[in-house]
Image (tube, rainbow, N blue to C red; front, side, top):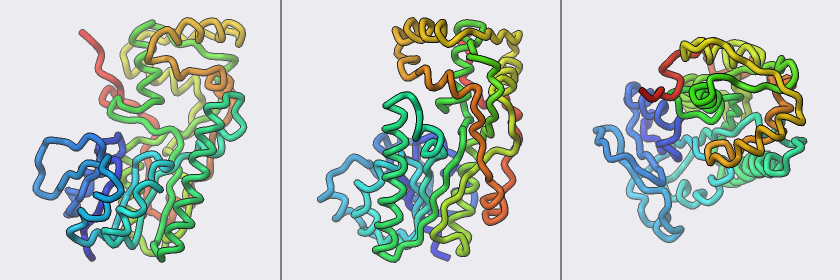
Length: 294
């Protein structure tokens, strides 16, 4: 098997996990990113991703038949010519279950994101089929790990800063958090398994927990007393108005609060069976959370 692989979005959370796993498995990687790493590894060659279309068509100096895209799926069409110039024959693309959960959101920006994901998936499938390239689309649920995600890590930062966490309603909506390392494992398995070509899979974590329980475990992992404050929606709007004065919380929305009581769960059995993966339960550790100051 030709163990040359190209990775788009290599410095992302899942991208770094991919680099770690694939170098250990003997892959030779051409890693593409807008901000290439300076660290040298004998199996990794870094390429800057923000080059022009004309440059994309001339830099291909070798065949790279296998590809993984862990950059946002809606940016991938801009690099279709790049992949063709390298002789792409099979690609694993990371999407998201947000294409389902945010499609009917009360927040227009979230609806826009869902639309971009759906359009991205459609473009990937059409392009790959047109050029006889095998494709696999993976849709993870709530990704966490290394203190870099926008889900668990954001909750942890709020707790670290304010020593409590606000929830709307009972916050009993179910979640299936999946570790970034398990997402990377699924990507590698999809790349290596011929029988899964031209399929979409939902990727779920190894445990289903309520939103409240998820927050409780984050408190415990941080070593903080659990202080979950239930507040009405009208007060949540006021809290959000104040939080948006802080850059980190500008993306928080009322829609996020409403989802705390909604089940956002998916059937991941097909992926577990076909990709032969066993995602870990949600035993969040200090290593999965942002570093605390002091």
